Image (tube, rainbow, N blue to C red):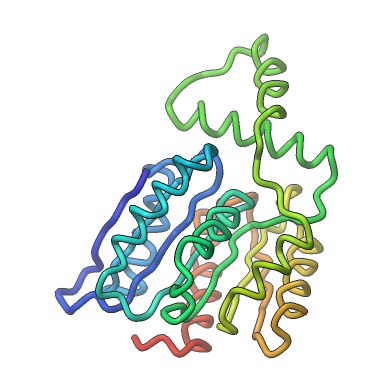
Length: 243
C-alpha cells in the first residue's frame, strides 16, 4: 500500500522523503515515521510504501510511489529492515535516474546480510506475528507453531553480501546512516557495522555512520525519539539537502 502526506508548510514540495516499510508493516504502523518527517522536514512530500512479496505486484506498487516524485528535486530514502532494503534494490532497477535526486540514505534495522538460519526463522516468525497482530487478530498458542512453519516458507528477501555490493555500486555517494537497536537480536550492532563496511567498500568515499539506539527491531523511534531525531538531523546536516 502507498500512503502520501505533505509537510506542515505550504512551500513547494521540492524535497521528498520515501519510506520503504518493513515486512508486515501497514500504513498505520508507518504513520509515526511519516509524522516524524513531517515535523523534521515540514516543506517535504512524504511517501511510504509497505511493498509486497509478489515481484510483479511489488514493482507495480513501487512505480506508483515513483509517480509521487514529480517535482521533487532532492530525495531522502529511509528503508526499514531487510524488506525495505529489498524494495530499495527493486526501485533502483526501476528508476536509474533516482541517484540524481538522492541526497541522503537511512537504513533502519537492516538489512542483515549474515543472519544465521536460526535468525532468519525468528525474523520470519516475528514478521508473521506482527502482520496479524497489527490487524487486531489474536493468535492462539496452538496456532503459533503452524504460523512459524508457514512463515519460513515465504521468500523474505534476504540479501547476500554480493547483492549488497552490487546495489551499493548503483547508489550515489551520499551521506548514509545505519540505525540499529541495542536490544535487536535480528539486527545487532555487529550486523550494522558489517553492512556499513560493505557500503564503504562499494563506494570508498562514501560517508557511512552507524548509530545503535535503545530499542528493538524497527521500533527505535518509539523507544528513543530524541536519539532517533538527533541521528537523522545530523545526517541532514552532513548532506547537501537544502532545508
